[in-house]
Amino acid sequence: MTTRFSGFIVTLAKDTREDDAECIITAMRLIKGVISVKPIESDIDLHIATERVKRDLFEKLYSILD
Image 1: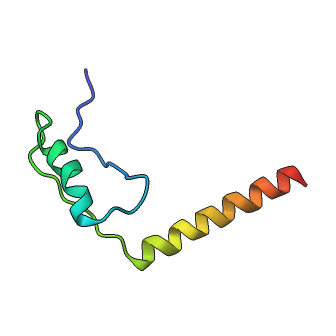
Image 2 (image 1 turned 60 degrees about the vertical axis):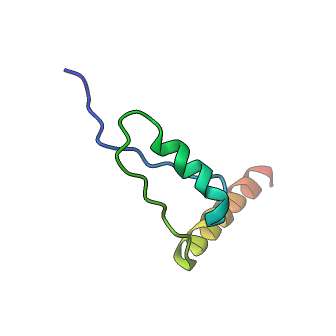
């Protein structure tokens, strides 16, 4: 039996302004089978989580090089 998907999460490389992201949103809506595209707003929690992951990766890389 084949696995079925109900959706996908798309992650942007960086936070993008609403007006700049409109073409991305429009393009995703044009994909066959897509019924909705809902942007996720960036917030302080996301920023903190991102900084913690970056710091963790930095520390691991530093320990390898040390």
